[in-house]
Image 1 (tube, rainbow, N blue to C red):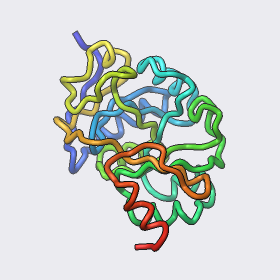
Image 2 (image 1 turned 90 degrees about the vertical axis):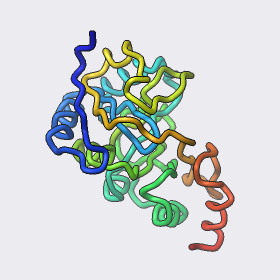
Image 3 (image 1 turned 135 degrees about the vertical axis):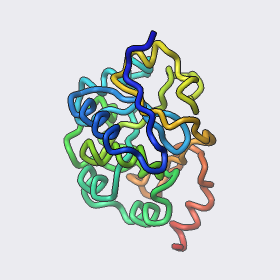
Image 4 (image 1 turned 30 degrees about the vertical axis):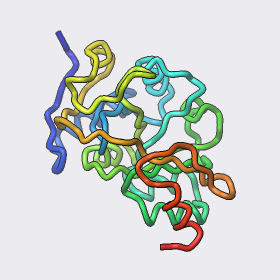
Length: 215
């Protein structure tokens, strides 16, 4: 029997009460399962080492693999990275909110475990209202890694998430079944020229064309 709190939440107009409950737990170092535009994710505060370590252990994830982030807005990204490279500004303006994750040089002091001591973070602004509202409620940035054990399929529906994993978290924001699909495209804009890290929804050729010629 599950004892983890489950909050049914409207995916388009998230109830502030449930966002507040989930955010309060995250701000105390908790870990929450929440919906994104594709799959359910594991979220915690990126500035709290204990939460970061819990997420690695829940996922059985290699500690050498950085954890990506969702940002509520551009201000949160700028606070973490300082000035954005020109390519990042152009891509963010064109594709955020959306399925593009940018790897950026880190300027703020986030725990090295989060970024595997690379000095970089991978971040996107999600178009999903719950993910964005939750990120905003915890200060602007939220860990965003799929709610599954490493190497296992990502979960579109809360019923697909293994019960042992749910038992290890502090709450679940249930927005029903999600679309799934391909992951976000990841581009490293901390190097010149920018480099494709992972293929995803956005075609690399479209991204290269935009960087070369603008919108």
